Length: 387
Image 1 (tube, rainbow, N blue to C red):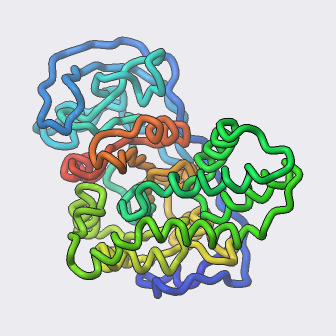
Image 2 (tube, rainbow, N blue to C red):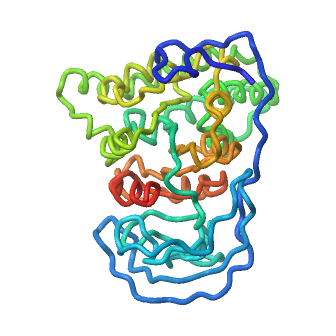
């Protein structure tokens, strides 16, 4: 497995990411748990705390058979009773107690009901998340913390459709939009170059002669910059405040994790210089004492998977000691590969409020343990993860 420079230190130099020559075997993977055979639903009334909470949900108890994570022993069937408060499912928490809505993260209306922490919009997909053990946390950047690049798909997809329209065997533009959206969505969370590599293949399929993937990437970044440059400029000049381009509650959550002694990392599929620049403009750089990582032109030398697996191996982490927040399939899947706790951020970047249902379904498919729309309910989230 690739080892990254500085990752072994508590405070590595965030501007340096390079591949070292030594490679070691990857860590063993663990299957993400899946619920089976729900039984025994018992509804009861439950009040809603605020306007951001889930609609009026009741309590229900459901028994599930869960696969064991890594070598973690099974949770006890009950925990010591605590007074009701943020982050508690009931006063006597068991692995089988969830909140009624529409399922343990059901993807559609044909499934059972969702599960929420009381009085919140925090959707609980895994009722047996190990609590209080987190030491390291990785954040995705765009769409998870930053809204600077909101609308990037509206730049990338039309650009690619235009390229494919010029090939000898091009379909209709409508059909091409479907093709492009499919692979752009599928590769979201990986470095931008992977979407461009796919564009190269799509051009070849249609009898065209593609440009180099890096050339397509630079074309895209130039178009995107036209869309977002005023946002970055306004932040740097003080004409805009960071809160205008942050997912709601980001600073509160980062502060809460740091205050609990968690080492924070930022990893993005966006190019490294841009991540550093935009994180600084948003006032986030100081929170990431573990380091800030981004895409390189030599794309094979860095990935979120490489960073996550290196952290787990370097610090001998057990699954529940590692936490990830992300709005993309990739970082959630990578986190679950090492048995970590994955929180899917199904942020609606355009409306700045509520859940993006498409994102939600994708994150559930990747194995997210929890789904949140943003970080407005950071206190409840932290209260649950650190009881």
